[in-house]
Length: 275
Length: 170
Image (cartoon, rainbow over all chains, first blue to last red; front, side):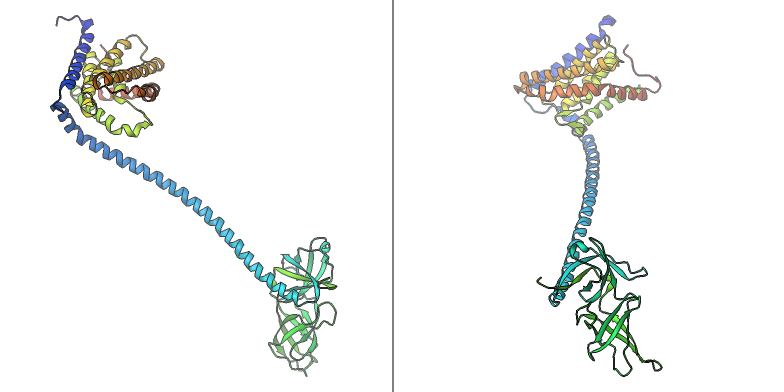
C-alpha cells in the first residue's frame, strides 16, 4: 500500500464515514420503501429478538409474580393481624353482652330487695385457699363494712369478712366456718346451713319426724338479721335418715355457681332502697 | 481467526439485545446505550480497522432494526469511534474519572448530533430531548461506563483466550 502507516487509522475511519454518509444519502433519496439489506437484517433479527423477548418476558413475569406473592404475603400478614384484632374486639363485645345479661339478673334481684345495694365486681376468685373467699372491688369508701351480706344473681353468696378502702374480702357460705339460718320452702322447717369447704352444704338440726325430699328449695330465714328473708340458698341434693341419731343428714347443692361468680350485690343493712 | 468471524455475530446479538432488553434497563427516559459504550471501548482499545468495521456494523444493524434514518447510527458510531481512537492516545484510559467524563460527553454530543440530523433530514424537532433524555443519560452512562468497560475487557480476555490479555491498539 502507498498510504503511510500513521495515516491508515484516519483513512480507515474516513472511508467508513463516507460509506455511512452514502447510506444516509441513499436512504434519504430513496422513496421505494424498505431496502433489501434492511429487510434481510430484519428477517434474520426477528427470530432472535422474539426469543430474547420471550425469555425477558418470562423473567419479567416471574419477577412480577414473585413481587405479587411478596405483596400477597404482606396482605396475608396484615389480614391475619386484622383478624386477630377483630377477634379480640368481638370477644370484648361478647364479654360485654354476657356481662350485660348478668348485670340484668343482678338488677332484677336488686329490685326485689328492700335494702340499698352496691354492685361490685369480683376481682379475685381463689377457691383453692383454706378459706373460701373472693375479693370484690368495693370497700369502705363505697360504704361497705365487715359483716355486710353479699348476693349473686342466683342467690346468697356470703358476707364481707374484711374491708379496706377500695376492696373487700367476702367469706363465701360454702366455707366451713359459715353458718346461716335457713328454712325449707315446702315445709317451712328451719335449720342451720353449714358450709363444707366444697361446693356442698350440710343442713343441720332437721329432726327425723320432718319430711325432707331431694329437690326441696332452701331459703334464707331472715332470723339472724344478716340476710333478708326469702333469698334462695340452694336445693336439697341428698337426704340420709340416721336411725341412731336425732337429726337427719341432709346435703344441699348451692344455687350459686361460686366458680363463675363475676358480679355481686352487697346489701347495706339499715338502709332501705331509695335512701 | 474464528473470533474475527464470530465478532460480527456478537455485534448483531448486541444490537438485538439493545432493542429488546432496553425497556428492562430503563429508568424513566434514561436507558443504557450498550452499543455506544462498546464503540467508545473499541476506539480506546481495538485495532483501527477492526474497531471501525465493528462500529460500522453495529450502527448499520441498529439502523436496519430501529432507526428512521438509514445510516444514522453507522455514521455516528464510526465518527465517535474515530474520536475515541484519537482521544484514547491522549487520556489515561485506565483511570475511571477521565474515561467517565469522556464517555458522558461523547454520549451527549451524539444526542446533539441526532437532534441536528433529525431536524436536517426529517424536519423533526426533538430538541427537548437534549435536556430531558440525552443529558441525564450521558451522566448516568458516564458514571457506569468504567464498570461496563471492565466487563467488555473481561469478555475480550475470555474470547481471546489464547492471547490471555485484552486487545490493544497497534
